[in-house]
Image (cartoon, rainbow, N blue to C red):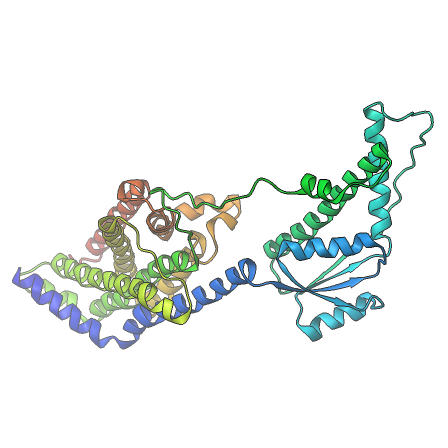
Length: 428
């Protein structure tokens, strides 16, 4: 026990002298969590709370185009500004950049007539199907091709964001088409305009949509940018100890420390175990620091607070396993690397690649299907899934047991490879 304690003390002193390693293990992940969470939270607010600037150039003088603009306004997604109807497409494009507007539309001159033509045609066909129209007196006229509604957007907008905007525009058009169709059917059947109260009653939406996060504990806590980013970048910070730990092992090999240890009445496995205990304390410290940042500091800078899972014991076990996986990987890199530059270079690059394919840098659901197998080969993927099971799905340890078992397997395999490598190098 004395040998182990002395070795732990030695490793702790070496760690405290590694200023660059401490910066990478604590300061870098804190900055990453702050910056990325702030950016992602701003994106969520842009989509969910703030209205998107929209320039509307209405070249149609009929009432239907005005109703379409009102329908867009009722959606609540846009902050609309009407511009001159005389603007050309190029002029509107220039005006968008001058006003920093993200999107703009041009309503063509045939907008109202196209909707009216379609409404009349659909009404006639419907009445014929019901046998309420004399088909011998009705001549079907094919729908004339109408001008398209022109939609301009800033190239910085991502495709998923554009699809949301396109869906809102399509919904507004469908609202107007449905409204005109109901009015046309009523006028055709009753030969008088539809009363306003009846029109409102028919078009009124009676079924609302309530969003509920499918949490396993039954809570209705809505996940936010903090819940996604704090666990993810904590894992990234854990695995970045490869810079300090891997480099430390290489330095000991090159300085002859391993040879001196073999002359002492002890085994290098004791030193290896000491490093694992020391750096496990480091990874758990990273968890405490970054999670504390999310709980207490984020609300003061306008970010959502981190909601801790109900199963704190499960959180501790998952954190220990994630830290163990990171330590095992770092020791393995240090064992096989010949120089400190190799350990640092390969370790850093490999962690970034593993983070990219695991869902930390890019969400896993956005990856192609061909990446499914590669993704599950990354230990960071199983760490992330375990944390998400606790933080986002609000589960307990038994709910994430399926994702923690691969971590245990990874630790055992990597530790075995490390011991084999040490034996081949005659270090143990």
